[in-house]
View (cartoon, helix red, strand yellow):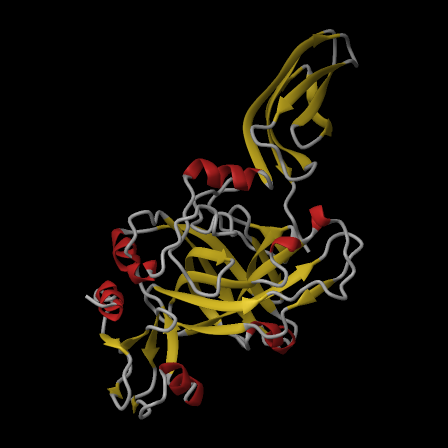
Length: 391
């Protein structure tokens, strides 16, 4: 079996797969053809006959940019396979960690949803939830590890500066600048819609930033399909550098946007409906590869570096009236930076008004509670600690 036959055999499970693209061939809407120069599948959008030799598939697509759309359905994305763990720089791309719950999450401005994913809304309405995948979802995606996916039910506003988007901030801009990256994900929509891909960077506190000037708008179908987009992150040449610890690049997925935001996301435009996502990946590579899925413990640790929520803490001790009982809580994962800490809920309090956060760092959080009268002062409570990055 030669190399082309080996590539082709891996794609035989793709619906309407016609094999390797060839010259002077009639193609019809919905057929899928393989470009062996990049090991990617493209779906035909317009009935046509391909160009005569010696034209290549890439030249044909460039000459007729409306004829083909890059699509990577199901398991064939395993060509090529890079087995090094940690290729995927996105955290929680399969949405298995949801310390804040399953939603619904809405935003007027910017709010975090499923771990590491921030929802940004201006004028639009959006509701993000974590949905449980079905056997049909796993069958189409061809991956038994699909447990959940992210759903956004949204309504776009016609204002020029309106948008709604889901984003993830990736720390330490130095890891990405001047490099080629490939962003990929599985997606589906309730009806054909676009999703916009945009990237920006920030060189840290006291530093400057940049937007990648041209984004990408991807047309989605009603079935699960994997999509990929490759771009080069600009260098920091001429950009004022700040505190590296607070620097980042941000990956933004736009569901709808007015003309002000359209320039950087490939012209998604104003739209409304439902879009589902799963398996988001960003890798330092010029081509897409199989989804890198760290084990569950690693995913949780990565998420808890940025955000932790803990339930059922107990502070208790004897103290004179108006004196405090102190609790030092050790965080299970060292956080990215000293977190912002909040007491979310006090389930009970005896001889005290409840616990207070008084100090902390990346590894410990200290609380106290003040006794109302001499005796045992105790309280049960929940907390959150956030070191999430944000704009």
